[in-house]
Image 1 (spheres, rainbow, N blue to C red):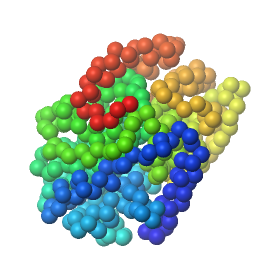
Image 2 (image 1 turned 135 degrees about the vertical axis):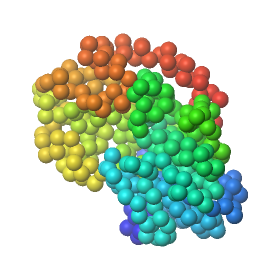
Image 3 (image 1 turned 90 degrees about the horizontal axis):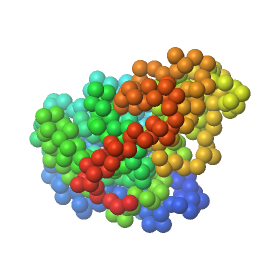
Length: 396
């Protein structure tokens, strides 16, 4: 645990330096849901509580130290009996898709129950003697980032077992825009459960409100939901995450590029896993070196033990200096497809799940331009923007 907290301190120092050097960061930082103790502690008093959290479920104390939500609750005499951990685990170090086992938190002795793999939804037994479940996880605003799927299953389980849900809200670092194709129901999976665009534009609290309001839960049930909203938050403000939300999103540039580069996960192109530039580069041994001069070789790393093209020289592009995106960008995906050695092996079966349809792959294979493809999204996006209006808590 000491190593864990030292790492938090070092990350915070990096965050401060980033804020000082970045003129676009809001001068008035939002007050997060986790900081609104007067709003949510009364909901938990004399109740049996469980937490859904990970390494991002923290708040800064007066000494500039990160304090985990679990420790905050215990210090406030709240009866916390267990912790549920999403993909990547409670400390956020596991690979994407890696099986996470249950365990015990070494500091508090609380049982940790994995909500990934075969147990994505809390069971009735796991929710026995629980009155309230507190959800506090940093999202990045992309449909295929699985924490919103965990939120769905948590809300559904709580609705079925008469457990209240309290969501402590946090900023969406990609919350300033909405873009991408709307997911079609037949392509629903854990990387896309709801008919929303790739970049959904909602905070976790707003998303929870939409899950209830749109009847997304089984049998259109509704969870008894409390959203502890932020103060002093505008979606146009740049928000630098003080803790990386998962092992392969190490900084603001990777988070900004992630919605666009994650499509490469459904192809034979590596998106920087196995490097220190995750989701800031892409490359493949099958791309033309004359067109893609940037070279790198993926290695086994924490959070990417067996990356795509492990140990093989990849040719691609480095995007660390690319202008920050305010839309979903398809040009890199299209360029890679057009210049790959074997187009028949470019896409894999995962691509359509990420896209939420079969038409994006078909359009790229047919030679459609990015703008032609984007034009097909606009009607769905207009309906979606109207649909989410009742659930919005923050202005742009």
